Length: 324
Image (tube, rainbow, N blue to C red; front, top):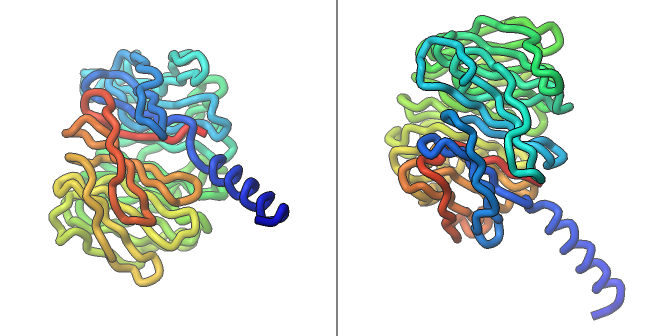
């Protein structure tokens, strides 16, 4: 091997390693904790008690913080248990708890990392929360039983799904106002933007479809049937190159692969029992699914189209975030 080839190989290996997360952060509903896993070995690095029911989970871009949505056991009442908790990754403990409306389930963080938009499932609202100060910047009325939240890559638009009204609310993040709403299929759950901001993909649990939305006009383009309409899809993620969309089918224990150009399902990958939510590595090579009924995380090699590892998590894993 020439010296130039050796240097290129080292450079490639360095870039490839940088694309892989340091940890997998998993929110566990029943054990009420967040598990930090080593993505290579599956070893439990830390188990962090959060005190309430954790669901939506995200990591900061710099990998120093993990944000997790917590809900108490009192429906329709905003209390001190309804929070966005902030975990210090190095200290491996909760360092802040910010009030986030009644029963926050999912949330998304703006590209600059400053604001979280959280859905309030039992209040029909979405809260804009300043992650630096904990101050509520706005409380916006959205659809009935809101759940999924997704922010456009340029930070301009916030989409909020609503399970009971079968609708999407569009929030102008600059003005912090709902500017549009439209119907999709039955029981929309999660939403994900394409990296170029041109499309948004929404999973519809009861219809067994994925709605494709024009991210510029906020209009429905089409709906794609997946997993023979039996999967009850929830989590959704878009590949970094925008060419494929991945959807967790909780009922059939599979992840569907959608060709984003042809707008059709092309394959299905077996994972653990009742996959709820999924996350993709930055290079698009690896997919991780939080499996609620098998208490584990599946590691999928997308080049092979197969699950290659299974890691134990806490009790009833709901979400998974990648910490870089």
